[in-house]
Image (cartoon, rainbow, N blue to C red; front, side):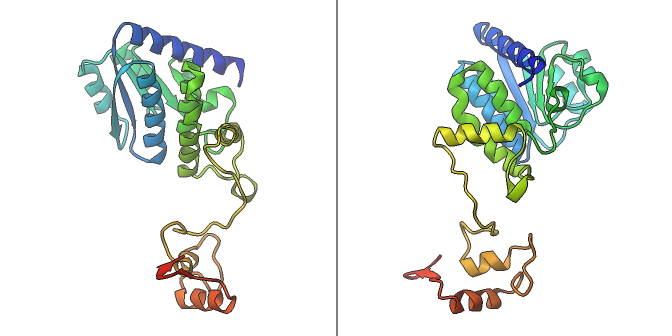
Length: 245
């Protein structure tokens, strides 16, 4: 973690602590996709643990209309996750310094100087593969309290949901590795080498293989009968009683 990131996270922690002590109302605004929902959940859980009064809102996109709406709302502090890149100037104009942003999407150079923007790219991290909004939210939550280390497992879900498993054999890279290792150390996740089959937790094995298209398996992908025949000929048990495995 670079010195500049440590300073930004310390500033975030101070702002939240002051808001909690002053009994200020905090609104968390986040994206509606997996990374947005998980990052919003991480930071809101951390806020609640601090004793904060907070509400969470999801939105499909960030816009000037939303900034105008935020200006009119009776909230003392806004925390934005997985959204807001490119709107720093507008947020400053409409909300003064009553906002903080945790994000991983690339931003323009002029936003790198805004202390309220805590973005992966500012600190030399590739927000495309090394850390997502959930990871940034986790780092902020951990800055609030080490007790929030258990939220590392949610950040792992966030990274997977944003398809950041781009390393060798679908592994993580960058800061995501550290976060996943923390979750593993706490016994919250298992990290192992296995087959990636679509819907393997909910579909019968022949269906899971047939629906797997990345990678495309010649003769098996989209061909359930061929998958069933292959597994049967291999002597693999496909049912536990009447239940498909």
